[in-house]
Image 1: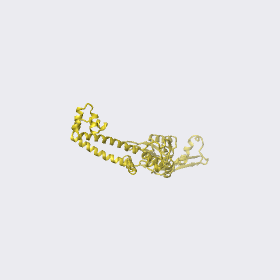
Image 2: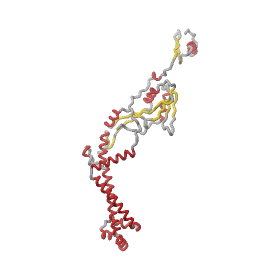
Image 3: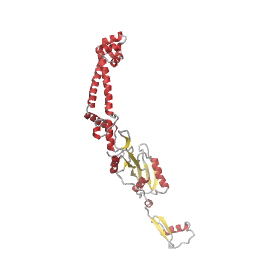
Image 4: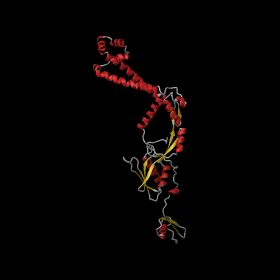
Length: 348
């Protein structure tokens, strides 16, 4: 088993070793991370972790921008629509911004990456809740489906009759036998149609008379008395014989399965395969082991850009962006800014 699957296409980044421990112990946690790509210099997020809303993520990123904790991000947009249910766009301030580093920071500080606890707690065959590993769950489920023949193998026992497959087959077999019993009575009526009609017409209590004359049970006699005249045609007799033949085949099949452990196991296998074919679908959450995301430090958030530092003989310092600047003009601007505008201008 690869690992758990979720309704979204976000990545499961938990290592295979940790996922294996979850199935061995019955508890643990998995982490999901949003899926993103670079597009026209921006970042486009196309899948979010389970139960994470795009509005919540944008709010978290915008809060960091307001607090000056994301100086490298210039704009946010939600471009989600019918064709693209999730499309969040993050625009950097320049093409020099390392967006891989920015996304790593956002994974660590927002819901773009989220952890989900797994607790395989279930009510066991003993009727008590307990955390069970995957092997125990599957073993007890098999006992639940096929009690008796498998109990000896896996070592479980259960006081209650949990044989769901056997009970289902027995229920159907009971229905088939009851219907066959009625059909047998109806065929007797068709083979003796004139005498049956005479008894019904002349007897004050036709049911006991039919039971006595043809050896019918009360159920069969009632079925005959409930027949309408239009059902006494020859064609109806052929339908009854056809139904009887089909039900006899089903009866033999059900009795054969109930009497054979091998056939019972084969039936369960076929039903599981049919369920997988009918209800199964492709995995939605891909598994990609990733390193743990780490938030950026304040130093890492400072943009990497050219800066010119102007230092005067008096020890005054001023910085300016870029290298192509007039050093003296920058220094004069420095002198005009408070609280230095009253100072005399020392030489550069």
